[in-house]
Length: 270
Image (cartoon, rainbow, N blue to C red; front, side, top):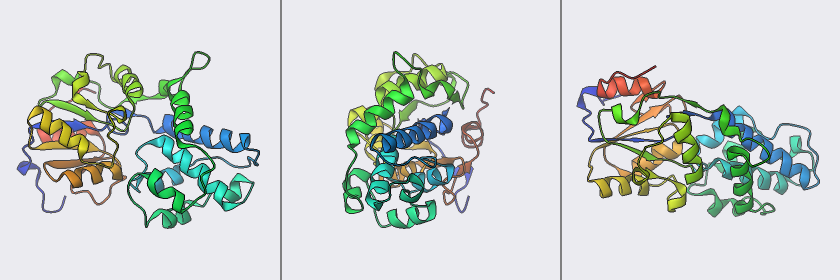
């Protein structure tokens, strides 16, 4: 943990990311990305001879910082594949290592810089809509969200400090997370989501929460590079990395329950 000591942490509120922190959703969202890429590549008339997404790709893209919106991953992969000029998906998608090298010079929201790397054949707004349907479900088919599981199994009211949410989800998807967490009564005013016009990486979500509710020292629990970049831009409080995707974080924990015990000396449910 470097020079930072747990005893020196004195937050006045808790801010949670959702996916990978409160809700175990890696399986559902990776499946949505895979299905989106494979389906749309095939519909475009190209050859589908490999999986459209893999855990290795996920590690590269989630560590980049520009892909907090998982549907943007599918959009980027489709356009990068199209730019290659290859019709077989196995030849069109860059290998994870090469993909990391291609994306390294760029930062910020991917919609701003991807046109420098690829001709845009697939529309971002349409891909996002299709992704939301795959995740949330339709009248005809259940969504992938039903495979999500809570990573914290206690009421938000039992936590020792004021609780807030800063998520890369849309409001409709936050509603599904509330069901997964059994938090139906969590106040809407304490949630920052994409439909408010705030997307990570950005300090705006933390600024909104602290400004609206009068906090100065948040502890922000996140699991991706976009979360860490948002906190670094904000510049106050503490960041607690959940999982193993941010190895250079000063505070790292295997799960949110362990983090709450260590930072706040609070006993969590199972």
